[in-house]
Figure 1 (cartoon, rainbow over the protein chains, first blue to last red):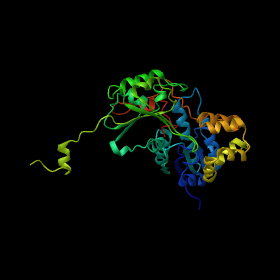
Figure 2: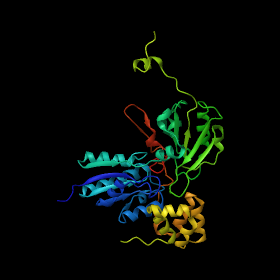
Figure 3: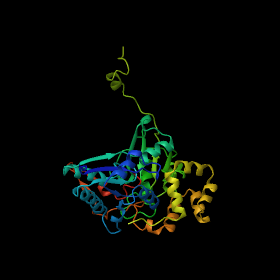
Length: 261
Length: 107
């Protein structure tokens, strides 16, 4: 008996080829139909080596097409495959659940229509950042925002925890980003200077897409960031600038310190 | 329909990124491994540069059929006014509004 239609959403990782987990590869190979979104032609070529008949979703992007419409079209492609009775694999770069609206939406809609749908985790840019910068998000805590979200929503930086801001080169960019948005970067620095010293060292980071390349790691003073030549889609890592202050009452209630005499 | 064949540089990248033994050999002796694939000077320079964009552009130049589709490296956001939704609490969901946030690099 044929297997029932089902959706498997997978991520192909950041580093082309070498980040592809065995279970993700198997999902791509074993599906009846694969929808593939690639970040660049090299990755696309490598993944088509795994599944030559994969259907490319990048073709749905267009200069004058609202991103939301593109995402909706991707979801419809995936759902059409399920409705036709196929086992569908939806593969995107990085982690399939991080900064990935259409994958979550495809799973939600598939389940709402009664299909089995699962997401297989994969390596994200954050995972590469922890490894390449040698930082542990559990050591001081870590807060992460898209850089535009951080500014637009008036997020509050906590200098006792690490702060990770994504896509600092495209802050406030409402059209296809081609160059770094300098005004956005300047505003970001201005806001961060309210919480961190000007001399505080920050790190501009971009993961290496190929195993034989080095990641971009640029260390600089915070007040030098606005004029720095940062990659368009780079990430900003802001290490903690101050120690956290334990709360004695909570420590007592947790049994972590004894009651005062 | 079969995929058009890749040129030497494209084949080299595909092999390099899917064959751990070749990658190890390449990292030990780059010039010797590139010699085996008969890469041009420009292709060797691209590989040795470590420049992601140059590596991809060199691939696209050799294999235009593989690079003909739109890729998502540089995300295009929705036009102003089309994005952003308000949830039941009245908050604007900036993830809907910001188009630079994409499934490319954040993920």
